Amino acid sequence: MTQPKVLISDKMDPKAAQIFRDRGVHVDEITGKTPEELKAIIGEYDGLAIRSSTKVTKQILEAATNLKVVGRAGIGVDNVDIPAASAKGVVVMNTPFGNSITTAEHAIALMFALARQLPEADASTQAGKWEKNRFMGVEVTGKTLGLIGAGNIGSIVASRALGLRMKVVAFDPFLTPERAVELGIEKVELDELLRRADFITLHTPLTDQTRNILSRENLAKTKKGVRIVNCARGGLIDEAALKDGLDSGHIAGAALDVFETEPAKDSPLFGTPNFISTPHLGASTSEAQVNVAIQVAEQLSDFLLLGGITNALNVPSLSAEEAPRLKPYMALAEKLGSLVGQLTTGTIPRISIHAEGAASELNTKPMVAAVLAGFLREQSDTVNMVNAPFLAKERGIEVREVRTEKEGDYHTLLRVSVKTSAGERSVAGTLFSNAEPRLVELFGIKVEAELAGHMMYIVNEDAPGFIGRIGTLLGENGINIGTFNLGRRDAGGEAVLLLSVDSPVPAGVIDQASKLPGVKLVRPLKF
Ligand SMILES: NC(=O)c1ccc[n+]([C@@H]2O[C@H](COP(=O)([O-])OP(=O)(O)OC[C@H]3O[C@@H](n4cnc5c(N)ncnc54)[C@H](O)[C@@H]3O)[C@@H](O)[C@H]2O)c1
Ligand SMILES: O=C(O)CC[C@@H](O)C(=O)O
Image (cartoon, rainbow, N blue to C red; front, side):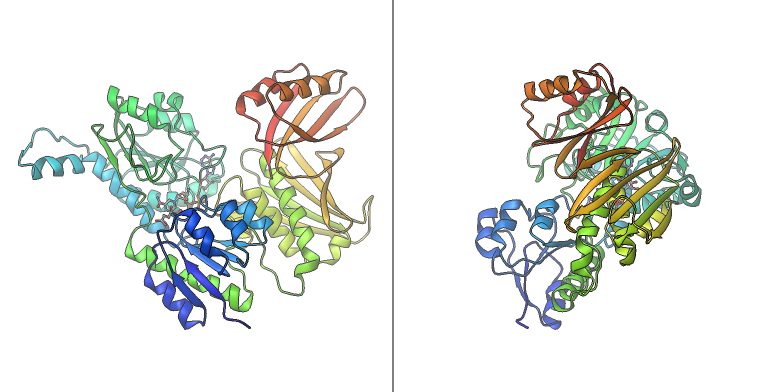
């Protein structure tokens, strides 16, 4: 076996390089390269270890002719084009949990800095002003902390805040009532959190649902005098509205570790009184950096030397023998899970995976994990096939697995059913030519669709003229339709339409589509 080569392209604790060397992996540490410079050298490497500075784009991946694995020493992988990596067969791994405590501590530090105006008081004192009367702070004891996102980091923040004798309310649609009780926090809706919180701290991934969650409209609903901390991802807050809220005095303070555009070298917020910023330092402690460096080096070495897969975001853990047969089933399972995840809201007490015909004879565990990973990806960008079953358990989702050897209409079939407040809902798919995943049933309606790229799901009354109207609307907005899949319960009854489109459908167009005559529901989908 030739010695695998790994490139560390972002500043990382030296323990990572040491582990690679000790395990017999060749390692180069070359940081600070431009994308063009990285493109020129990436072809030499089997593995790439990164933090957040390196952007692993489609272009970089195209030039990475030998690359087998990308390892993110950290949690968020928004700097990696995962679909492009998957398409190239490059495994993407992260190191969940390694920096959670550190990031939670940074959020608490920023909360205190806001409460006592520490940066401004420090600058004034060191300027020789001794402005004792200018800096009147607030206590955090007895105040209400509003947590948006109560996952790994959010729940650590909650425990620290409770230790500070704060009251903690949380908005997280995927937080079960049992978990909230276990954490000692109160689960509330977003509007209630905005109304009640003295401090707000954000701990969600950046997804289509969380983008701009503190929009201008939502910021206006906050309590006067609120203080806001964001150590999660830029893009969760409307920065212009935040600036206006600080200027008007409605918002008493804001601290951002993350910005919509990074590095943030110029922002209208800079210089605003009661605004504090740090340059994405959430994970920057020696302890966290040692944790994530060790984890990423061990994971990449295991993969390159032994084929072991840990904390992968785009592939299941599989043995070498099973892999070829299971691969198309995994893709089908992931897509069905993702479809259900995108089309259901709120907490789900049960998810069932039913393998029928040929599928029932295979190892269904990775398929179940793939369904769960696809389903939970809407809620957490750190989920993978390894941690999806644990995450499902933590969220109180009962997972059922059923096998039926007898074939039905199809030689092989996977069915995913979820229990919702509206009853049991299920989708099913098969493999065409034993390799190509196809959706064949959607909530009781027969369809035949490939789940890929950007799509639209529409429920409408089956009536003449509808297809023309939706086609015209998309055409007028420059959106090209790739495929068109129709299904209906009965003639003149409820019909579903699954469209694949060549580009994302803007929210405004979704809104217009939902107002077309006879339309009951429109949802954008992404696979
Ligand atoms: N500043 C930094 O340096 C730094 C360091 C580590 C992590 N992070 C970021 O912090 C964030 C949280 O990380 P984590 O490890 O806690 O992730 P996590 O996946 O454990 O938790 C995310 C939580 O957000 C919740 N959520 C998802 N959609 C939501 C919605 N629409 N509304 C409210 N809640 C929603 C999920 O249910 C989940 O509980 C991530 O974006 C991560 O990239 C930043
Ligand atoms: O590597 C860093 O410094 C930031 C890491 C952080 O954003 C993460 O998502 O883990």
